[in-house]
Length: 216
Image (cartoon, rainbow, N blue to C red; front, side, top):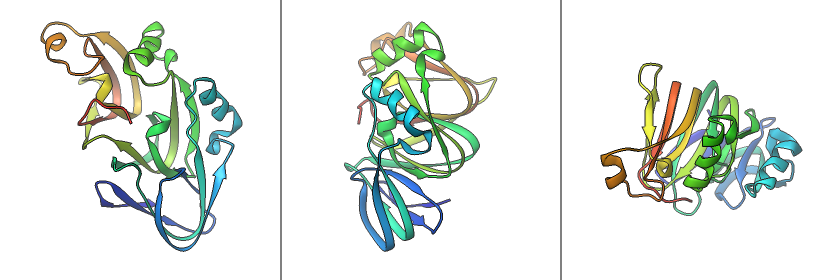
């Protein structure tokens, strides 16, 4: 995989001839070797349709195409960085959390309302996250940003995971999600603006949760 964690807020990526990477614009901190950075106007491998989908929702995140032969150090805003290695499955993540990712991954856009119907739409409003979520599928590495540390929680068919929507970062695998109303003690101790709701994830995969309820 192309990413090596330098510390909790910086990663180093190996760039090789013939293999493209994408990164958020402004995320390059330093590089060695013969590496070029080109503004990407087609939204990565998802193409123009993917980019337009996010622009309709006001969620397009400018990308750079990274090519050449060398190593690049990435970081942005002092945010915590989590490297996720995909082995043929799909990662669901908000576009503005993407720091950099392997160009071999297929990029797309999913309308959140398609998971949970009306509640999917409610989730977008309650969490402050968009109604469109970026998907990355295939084999490769992804570096995502979060506030504070990140923990990976496994999701199994017999053990669903409930997450504070404000602390949700991303998830991967064959997972469905829905927003449910919290009850009892959760209503009293929740700290985020969405404390009356929980994001329930079921299936087989994992969810990444940040140690904060702040948006990027």
